[in-house]
Image (cartoon, rainbow, N blue to C red; front, side, top):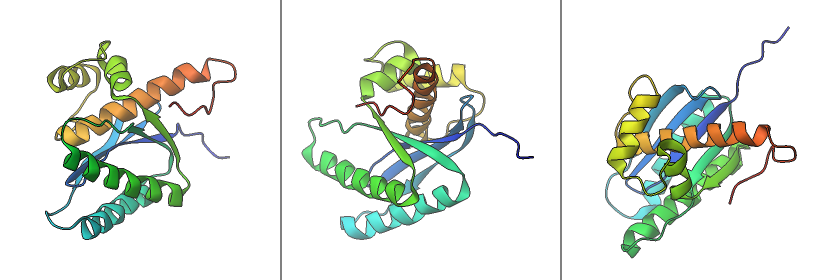
Length: 170
């Protein structure tokens, strides 16, 4: 007889130089986390590295769902372009693996973790350390943990709302 295991959820904080990732279970416990780093240079080889390492993460865990923050366009256009390129590579790898993707506004992630949608990175880190046992890694991995935990919590709420299960936030 098969034993039921809670689903594993992947949080990703995409970036061309550093992409944070975190695997959490439905109980919001961190299973693993890390940061995929690429060397400076043209984007194409960096995206190949990103997809290759993300495929290794996807092959290592039985992931059903992934969550990312929606693209936020700040003041630095060149940084936003790199993030958009990394997001595209991440979305392609997740689609190839058959993983369902959910997206959240940065303010929603902050609100779920801290109760305040305009929380600083320091406040986010402090709240994560209070709420979770163990290390969340560097700030890229910690952002991915926050996104994954946000999805786990949002998912639990959605499961309690008739007709909301499987809904993909926008």
